[in-house]
Image (tube, rainbow, N blue to C red; front, top):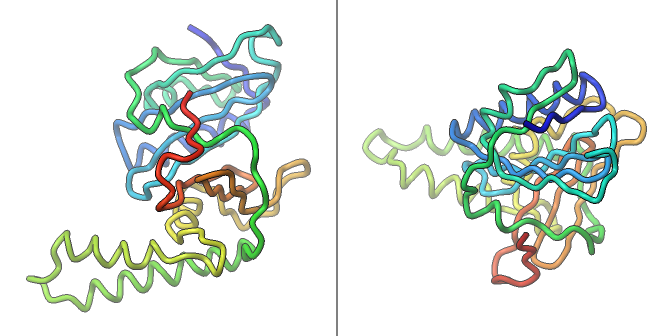
Length: 228
């Protein structure tokens, strides 16, 4: 079994927290792992948000000591979580599983450009709080006989499909980022990438210092899909 040596116990704790949040939304969640150099990319899809979550984990040394080999496998999120040893900053790669359809379609590796107009993180968190409050208010106004799953889903789609300013970014992406622990009020550590909205082909990606949320833009069909 392949053992990954993470940069430190903080990286191990963050990986465990990310996996735990994914499992909160889907107890049978799978994640796709890609490791090259000193970075492990963990891809997951919380079904409630219809987005792709990406957590980059720093490794203590280049994968396979820098040999020309890459890790690329889809595994059970629960089994990976069980293997994380925070004190020792290690994680064992479980056996491969048959990946869900999303695992075969990932955002492109490059070609990302900055999209202007993204509010600061405090404003994004306020947007999510206002959307959650509106959802609760509108659903509470429904009489019991009208409070059906279809009615709740309709209200949810109306609210979470709205975009953030003129960016084209759906509010559900920001909600996912906050729910998965990517929109933290604490200042990022030195060297971490700043908050930004990026686009590449059919994809938008909300990048935060703690992880990214990617989403396919509607109406662009299968353009610029990276299948790997």
